[in-house]
Image (cartoon, rainbow, N blue to C red; front, side):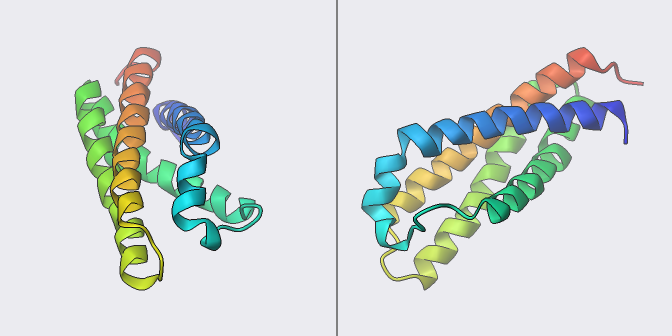
Length: 137
């Protein structure tokens, strides 16, 4: 694996995981409890969460960070990250809205916005750092 991909993955993972931990653990904890509390497990399934994060971060790197690094453009990473976040989070939230009783419409919009913001920030930061740490060949 190239140094660029290792750096891109590591930076994307750190930024996205920190943002999501703050979001889930502090900012939106009461929101999820209020909107879908009856659906929440007492403790999250950490194995499933780990698999999600690895797959999602690989997707961010492949579709958002690598194109941004290739173009030397954190803005490209930001925009690709936002679109990737919208598509991924909309898939999850709108499927739940379509199939689950009690899934909150308010939560759909908030969650999709969060996916766009977190993915955009993680991708842009990863592009900015990767392009500074790893010179293009």
